[in-house]
Image 1 (cartoon, helix red, strand yellow):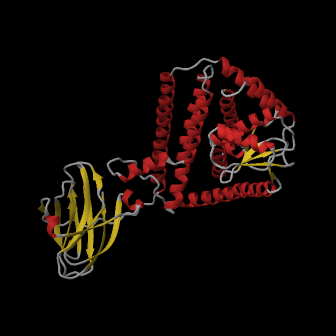
Image 2 (cartoon, rainbow, N blue to C red; image 1 turned 120 degrees about the horizontal axis):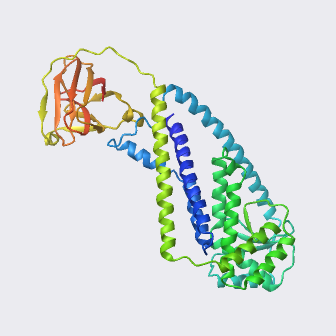
Image 3 (cartoon, rainbow, N blue to C red; image 1 turned 60 degrees about the vertical axis):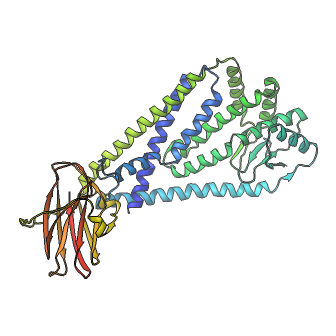
Amino acid sequence: MDIILEFEIAMLLTLFTGTAAWLFWATLVRFASGYRLCYFMYSLQKAVWLFYAFPVLFLVIRKQNQDQGYDIGSFATPTPLIQKIAIPLALVWLVGFCITLGRFLCAQYLAFRLQHTYKAVTDRRWEIYQEVCREQHIRRKIGLYEGDMSLTPSMQGILRPGIYLGSMEYSEQELRLIFMHELTHFLHRDLWMLYLLQLLSCIYWFIPFFRKGKAGERYRMWSEDACDVSVCQQVDMKEYQKVLLSVAIAAAKYKYAISVNICETQADVLRRIDKMKKHKIAKEMKRSAATALVVGFLLAGSTVAYAAGNGVAAAYDVLYNATVVEYVEEPQPLKDMEEYYEADGWQSHTTVIEVPESAMNARAKRTSFEWTIGSKVLKKTSSFYMSAGGSIYVSVSVDQDDKNVNVGIIDSDGSKRYIIGSGNITHEFAIDTSGYYSVFVENRTTTSIDVGGYYSK
């Protein structure tokens, strides 16, 4: 159950992180629209999609939760009511994920079969293609194929990438520009990002922005613009635009796979031509200003995401407190027992075994334990943070009534305070100094003993 709940919270926090990064990126796009920052903003957008992919914020909050010096309440601790809600939600998400992923895999399988209808190019076009590969310093073997299933040249495949030409005839100059365009997509790792976005669409199928393919469309648009900018730095822009228009006239009506095409539609080509013209006359931004943009993007995005994450943790703490079922027991009368004290150094003649607590127990106000303790062994809990003025109430029951045990706490400086007793033992240890403490039971007898009990903070 902990795993299911933590997965749901991780997905929610990651969605917050990505959305915050996306909003700040969109703001930067508007701010920098008059500068030559097309490739820069395209590269920054890749970081935005990575924020949607990796649960950075969840890992940070979880780490803070494990460091008991930072109190974030009952984060990810399930209650019966939360379990009733979390499990159905997980099942609904899983069904949607499987359906979306199934559709994607079916489309990929169809694309795989269609690719086998193409044949390798071995004529003069292959020689031109090899020349362009050498000019672009590409050593990896990337196939070149032709067929009738598509009219628009495209690149497909990430493990075995290849450029697929349609049935149209092109001049040598047009082929060179087409090859430069598609190989630039390869150098930019655009296919990898498109596959990542498809995976994100499966994970966040319940978000219209992903389900309707808007994320992929936005990335395609910027990847094409960045590719155009890179190619136009090497060739004449007008010649390149002519090739785009000629290919757009016979653009494919169907696409069977994740691919990067030289153009999508005539409207897309006209938009890109206008973007190239604006980029040519746009102003250069100073390096210092660009650096400030990146720093501002990281700080602003991370601050909002972090605040949202802590808001989620606080909201969950309220939900936990509202749904937790507390079992009230009759308090046992405390005996006036003498406390003993040993300074740091007692570990040298004692076998110490730490018993790590589960994530749920570590956050609970009351923690139970069942231990078997060997002869001359001290077992203790993980450390937890306590503020001055508080207290730790310990209740221990020893199965062997005739065996005396030491029950107590270990301070952050390594010293220990304890009482000695047998049978049912209860005691409240006052906390005078803020710090990390752990509860222990020590068996100084010559035989093993079984103990059970709890402590409350």
